[in-house]
Length: 366
Image (cartoon, rainbow, N blue to C red; front, side, top):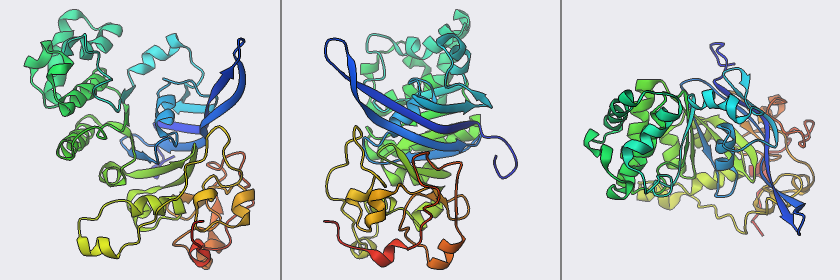
């Protein structure tokens, strides 16, 4: 529930998505890739939730699972109060109108053999919109995203990267959805074009009352568009907070490291800031580390981090973080915090509430 008592538009409950690794003639499963591992959060109608993390952390997989391009291995995806995680293809079709996705690569996500009118009009055709209405609707959508109706008969190769991404946005808007999952929609674009695309998404949200799940690895971009930000690491949700709170008071050391990489336009402030370099590779999602998954790269790591998975703890104002040695928190605050049982994964120890602030036990990364 939101502060005003309204139910969330979409709620993710203990969602897992594993990809089997098979070998042999019979295709026997020998291991699993833990792409998304027991993630819980909710998104209110009209809100933008930013989903950030390194490449390979599972954020894109989670986005595709939410809109049911992937079937979850376990857990529930609740959309408008209805569990859609186990619905079949036929039952999902009416819901496709309400949930759409903008893909990362504007070059690969558009069929090069089809004209723009056909690309944007295909969702309308599938859902029974009359042919006489489709052309008019497609031309309206092209104008909505800042393109000309005259582009109706052009092919994708005749457009720039930014224009192609606008076509992808128009396709997502065709059926008047309530939820759009934007999977790194600006990462393949030039910086100048990125700002145009972000402003377009912001204007469309205000005009059409859209709800976004905005996936990105650039925290500077995410801060510009998001009300709340969720940080993922190796398939786990490790921190969730409002945008301002996360940037001003990161609690999870992984979030601190991500924020230290965001460029600052002031050269004096940039020179004074500590740049935290995470050494070593991200552990394999096939065989993730025990305890806290970030501990092999964390400069605050102690023995408990290797042995016990930390619960997601509520530090106030909806700021959740999973860490045994939280940052920017004093001992008095730690004495008052509570474990969020609703968000904590099953494998985490709910009794392992953090006791010591991380800043007091800092050590170099080996």
